Image 1 (cartoon, helix red, strand yellow):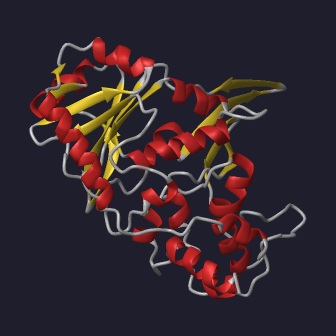
Image 2 (cartoon, helix red, strand yellow):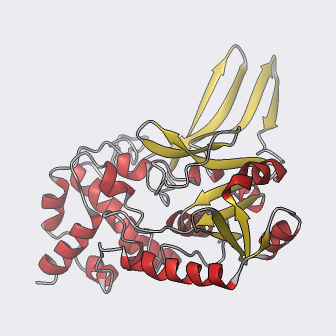
Image 3 (tube, rainbow, N blue to C red):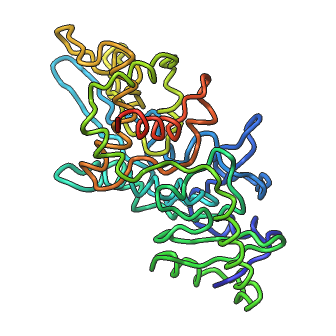
Length: 338
């Protein structure tokens, strides 16, 4: 383990050769932005929009084109070549990126744009000191103050940060910087204490055991009508979810020049599954709300072997009608099991 004084963080950010993203104050909350000399808020708990937008941008050009007579020129878009450093993401968001990897980087179809960004990005995790009342990461096997496999795990001990690399490239980066000293035994003990205390602050729990099998047997259960009744279909839960990855592809052109781009979409929107012939397999709110919960708790485990939720609590915080996936899981276990 290494240690660095927080006062030296501007020097660290300047020494990182590439695009450095840090949490910054945005209105009443926080978001990730390119570091441009602004102060780093060490007391933040999580960002409103997850850092997935850095690896999977909300809007992204796929290619541009020009039409001149009968000739068409296509220029594929390419992610930036310089490396990116996401400094201070939380363990739940790191785990979410691992789940996005399963979607975009495994199987027969590789998403080249996402993969290039992912290979060129360092993930520097800052452990949580305490969870919010809406955090339930431990229900999905996460630890609030540690992310196995992250390039760096970091812990805030007041005046200093303690850093432990978790990958070869993270170790190589740390050894190449002259701003760190060896952590003392006392500091290492403080880190272990912080990790244990952080676990105890997670008080919200989701009943995950057996939920996938229960949902497999209750696709048409009347509970779906009750759950969907209050949903406004605003899409906030999906846009702010760190594991949601649905997107649409569109084209725009003016005077022979244009672009093909993709942008985030949401399964909560009525047109998301609308087919060219006019048929919609999810015609009502009931089907769309059901799909959202089933994707996290049934389809993702069936296809990827993992739950599609990391317990970050963003959907609980930002839903205008307080739809709660943990409450739904408890309700499903009570009602569907009968």
